[in-house]
Image (cartoon, rainbow, N blue to C red; front, side):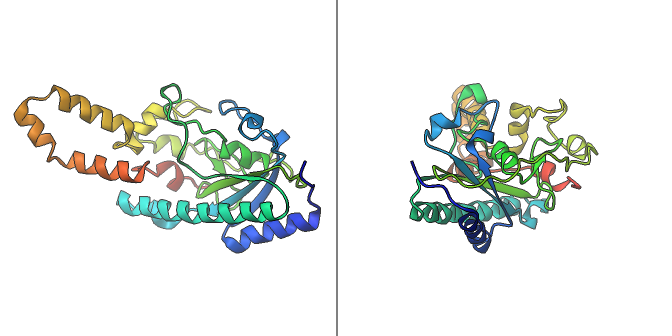
Length: 258
């Protein structure tokens, strides 16, 4: 079994993550991590003992009504955080441990039973266990300083790192702004996000949109089929497929006053 890190090594690890561009860092014990839908963490990484969680500030791009500008900001942040995940994992390997990275988003299991919305490791629940934030009414993790304008990544390791205290405060103002401004009504039931409603609006050119387009294409007559093959929708589907997920709604982030 890998060695345990002392407080000095833990502090150096946090300093590295902050130097790389994270705005906050927390350490969770694997035993404190719990999630209702993702697999048992010990099945994902049998030797895992600690989870390093890093917070990154969302760019102001999310405020833009031009969704491609908004999405480009998110893609920049995702690429940046991925690179830092790798560097932190290499640091942990250099200390004699094994390390596995968990990015903010894709790839993740694309299952019909979960609507492709349940990851192998829940960064949200790891974040709460690491003391970096708590759940808001929008079902996102709210950071005490950044509110909902934040994303989180995780690096799992078999090194035992002194854990931070899990988050037990309430950052959410319970103003219901996220509920009132959700164009799909996906947040109407407190404590639950209706994933299918959400995806229909925030990912109109995702799997569901592609399936609907192909269904219409198969049922169309020859002339209509030719028109559909030169339609803007096909171009948008092509771009979304090239990028994987492409979001067209950031309302639950940008309207949150926390």
